[in-house]
Length: 73
Image (cartoon, rainbow, N blue to C red; front, side):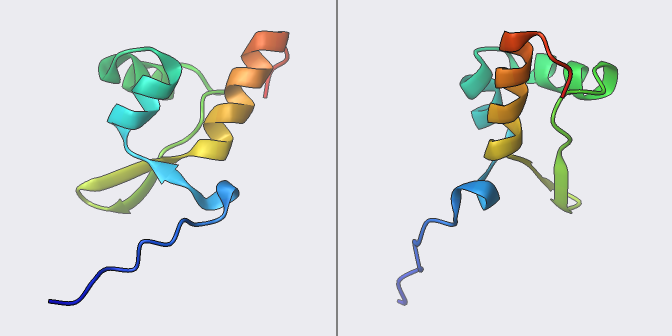
């Protein structure tokens, strides 16, 4: 068996699934999807394949910071 390369991508390219995004934001997965649908300032998901959608960690952090300061992203 070959070992997989487990290098960590640069911070701006780090992506998480909806479960991890929800955990980062302390909200439920359904709430993440609700925010995607209803809040234009919320980070947009990136569809990598029909069954694989991810969120950029950097976008989530920027959104949290903008919400904390009351500034629209």
